[in-house]
Length: 306
Image 1: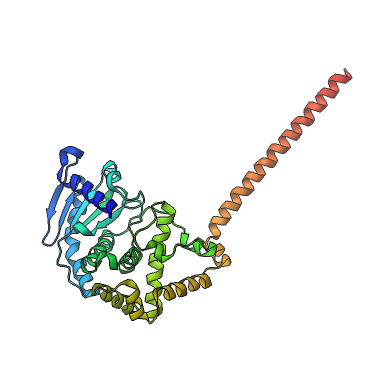
Image 2: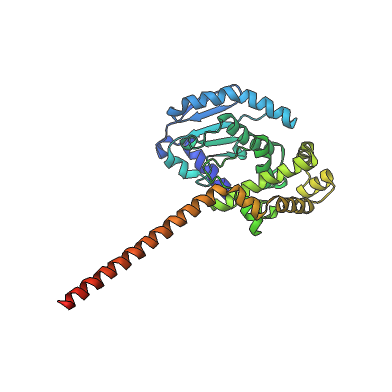
């Protein structure tokens, strides 16, 4: 919570103390939201204003909840200002529910060109969840898992590794328990990416095995003031711990070393090729050294005969 308050303070300074940080922000006032942006980002700001009514209507229909709040979207392109308040260098968008605020780092959106409307939808899911559910009742892993599930898998992580860290974690037994992700995610890059993957995987598991309507039943129970353990038991007739155990056991069945190797065959071929190249180069150096030594010995013998 302390870190969150510091983040909000810094963003407030950026928004309202332009001389201090030498940042100029323009704004567009939509009917239902406000977009503040650096001047070069006007096109993106206009796109967000145009997309928001449709996304809002869609989310209200999905959750059957109202979105009476008026969000502010902050678009930043200057990397120095992004580093001022970014929670992690991998994160290019995040929500601050306490302020109904969404921050998007536009300097890196081109790296993996996801559709902007899905990024906005993802962050708005965080806002609607926190508007209707009190923070103590909404674990971080469920918050993030639902946001990725609703927004078709788009996470804030747009510049992370492509390979699945979760597969490796399952094979090695080094996955993170959901209880350890209740209040926040790891700050190191690998731990953070793994936490995102696990969150999405667990929510997918519930939806696929028990039905997507169970996700919304859990959410409505949380909205009514129930804790996560009560919500799971009432919705799935099993404790959160039992569901988590079933999820992990299914991941073990689906992820074997053979399947893992097959899924990463091109990586292993590349590594094998690189290794063979190194071995060949070493053998070349050995042969070259051997020939050099032989030539030197023959020359020395000739000199002795003379």
